[in-house]
Length: 252
Length: 163
Image 1 (cartoon, rainbow over the protein chains, first blue to last red):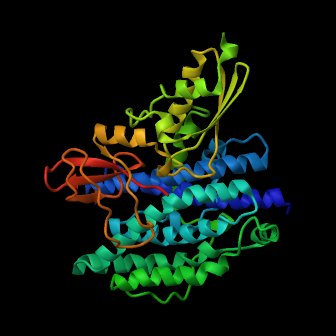
Image 2 (cartoon, one colour; image 1 turned 90 degrees about the horizontal axis):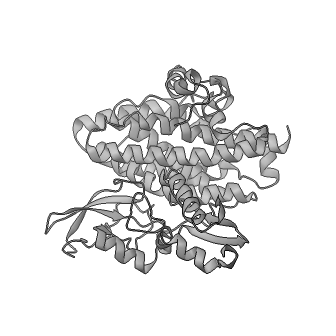
Image 3 (cartoon, each protein chain N blue to C red; image 1 turned 180 degrees about the horizontal axis):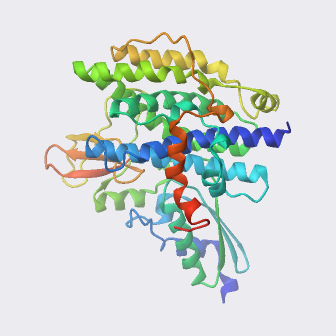
């Protein structure tokens, strides 16, 4: 594998993470439990889709085959999407959406912080910009985890079930293969193993504060980084790609 | 005539371009114009987004091109991400205009990653009371939070601090 190919693959992984989660969050538009949260979730969706745009634009430039950011976002097949399984999981109730967000925000905070040191100026710039947004997202999701976990008997039970269900997808956030190794040689990216312990500590601190139990995961669910997705992904793509598939090249 | 236009004049023309979502602010007040380069009648304006997903950026780009075309300039707008925009770049004039418009200007805040920190005191833009409360960190646009005044009861937008 060449280095531009590795960089393209790396950018696509993270662009897909943010696009797919942005798509999921936008499903809440008009359905939030209260107006403020409807607005908050769609604001976060907007930030994530904004980050995806920056990542796809740079990926298109690196690939240099005439594909645009829109082509990459809307005209690939399911197996070509490399997002982690966590972000494509269904919204469930509000608490489940919050737990999924909380886990992803924690990863993004540490990953973007590490990417600030990237030897690639554009990667560092995207990280610098995105990090400011992620801090708001993490504060929002963490406060809700605590509010629901340490809330009523029912909110506690329901968010605990979501934690128990989603924790098996966490390990995949730290997926690394030869793409990462190649890019690490030139210090384009860092080794995410370096902040894995910090990630778990940050997550556990909030879960403990929320009076939640940290589940002991024996089996980690993976596949998304290799293009092998859960059954929810096809439905999500069908909805997201519908307009471009039906009216190719249509403009807003 | 157009050959006599100076970079300084271009900055002045840009003061006519408003933020479409906060129409009281110009793009210069907002601090998103990073650079202006002139080469005869060719102009290169570099802007930086407030938030990555800000839907106003494309509109602002077109408005800049249209405004400068009235002066006979052919303009290209380039977007840069680094250094990342911060609310510190909003001019004092811009802050005053925001407050006059009913949007509380950004206050100095502690690091966002600190959980459950005491919320920032944001004075009410209407009655100036400091007795206000945060309703939601996320408001009508990506750059605003939602507050309410406990004294005059006015719900208001706060242009949130981004550093």
